[in-house]
Length: 70
Image (cartoon, rainbow, N blue to C red):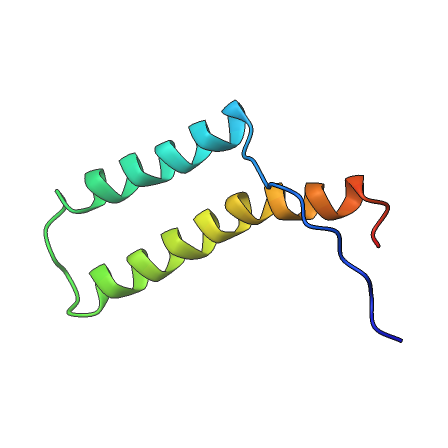
């Protein structure tokens, strides 16, 4: 049986936005470090994006949970 989803606007909280901003700051500071491995920037970027994805997904999860998971 397919789940019924109700369209809701997903929003991030101020704290979530702050965390995403801090992750961006971490990236900017990382870029100031000397390169020690050719894949370092790509790997760090991928990790930062993974963390940002986790934070930004919270709004969508909240919207689904508020609708009773339907």
